[in-house]
Image (tube, one colour):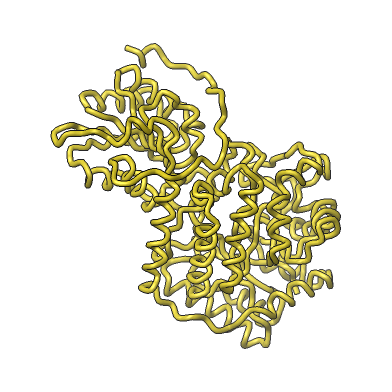
Length: 511
């Protein structure tokens, strides 16, 4: 057995993958957005993988996917849009966390997946973290543990294996490991007090698998955790006593760029991983052949033990029956809405003839761990449905000064301005636009559609509403609060930075 999870592009499995599953060389696959066309095709793909294993006399293969909810959902187009971890964190509700786990499991099973790379148990220690962000439940280790355990228990009780990530923690970094290496300067004692709290709770709850972080912890080892025997064996296996599966994060990520691609799976196995996840690496068939006799009997036993619990039979695929899932997701999105400031200035007070200026940000996905951006912002339609005289103005993420000045000028004469931000904390253009509007006497209401940290960078807003995500159910919930149709009941799941870093405001922006 090659001890790895392979991936491939396309809507059908290549012949070599089916052969390798049938003859026992490959124990499982990881599927990505490029494997998904629609629900029927995706189930048929997974049925072909199951049939290959059954035909070869093998146990069912592990079929994994990133279906976290919120920001990262590899399966769309009919699957329930869930608000995600930070939104659940804003509710503090274990019931909502468990409901998320049940919904994810029910839909994944019907589609043929038996392994979900979720929940994220990273603690949002650094609010500027570019890759974890909304994927974390918050910055309180105990809250992360409580909500994470509720989600994974529900998911596993419903028949899908959970894979908590990213061990031993990716929340205290300012670098996206998809793009570069990150390092966390914490002692073991500090890790045990923060990052490891949720993981230990998950282990005690029977977590099926854990995913590694491509992050260095110099106090433990100079190598990334994925390649570190000190972390994956000495800490995880021996000190913490974890005997579930250890799966690596995708081995194509740039955090591992200093290691030749052909060596990455072998080094991960030597460190103590059970299943290197090959991700988007090229030449995977050759890698499988090279690892076919890699040994590691304890790892083999763990993989076989988990696969023996899986089944070939799938429940019916009936998306029409998922209406209750969508209702629950919308309820969670509404419960998460949080007003950070300016509650006394809400709702919008507009007469029928008043003009409302709505400024939205076109950003695209800000990290590879994001799969939700569409061509149009649903908030525009949702606001216009409530107030017909709305002018919609779009600026790009990273807009230059000329674009900012033009957008602000188009807001002149409006009775109210709503600025729907997308990580304004990391975009000087959005912050400059906000200041320009304030200078013009158009103090905007802010709807922070992604990071709630925007609230700390825009302290002079008429009000700040946080939705913790850009899914349509979340923008709808924010619009309902903006127009007084609903009360915001959420609480910030992380502490905002207290200092607003200075940034230059060109003289032309004050005239």
